[in-house]
Amino acid sequence: MSLWNRITKLISDLGSNLPFIDLFRGPPENSVAFTISIIALSAKMAKADGTVTRDEVRALRQIFQFNAQDEDDIARVFDLARKDVAGYREYATKIRKLFVGRPEMLDEIFESLFQIAIADGEFHENEDAFLTEVAKIFKIRKYFYDELKTRYVAGSQPSPLQVLGLGDNATTDDIKSAYRAIIRENHPDAMRARGMPDEAIVLAENRIRSANEAYETFGIK
Image (cartoon, rainbow, N blue to C red; front, side):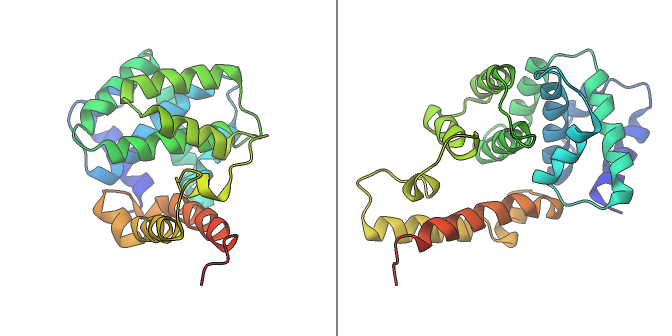
């Protein structure tokens, strides 16, 4: 059973009339919790730029791998979250509590939202306001938020050091250590250990690709 089938089954088992936010009453398995967190908040964010289209669902391909036959299931889950009367702040608060003591998962969810926000090539001011508020609720560190804006927002060109999460005074050893850490932390086994679903491998692949490109600019042997 695919991740998407498990999510729709979870919704079905809990009752078709159940408010979507009630999925966060008790923690489902990690990979499902991670996925519905991103879907729920991206569905709410879809309203932030004033448009809600099927493209918003396809934007999830920035994070997840899925087949064409999964798209209807994903769209159904997305629509359930979008139509729920609960506001995004309520969702973000419940998600923060779901991952209490695991800030790295909140970082993953927040970075995923950033990628989805810019999937259409624009970063709307309302999306910026939405993400700023979610960052406060998640207690995202300001430097991480600023780093994501530099990395993802159109018109920004992050330096290789910024891609590796380093400052201008980084040494060669710092560069090597940062690069190896990114490769290690985004290995599929490490992703699974954090509770990431296999379908989210796209996120790791994007990070590794960016790290490789940044590292190659230094010509380090």
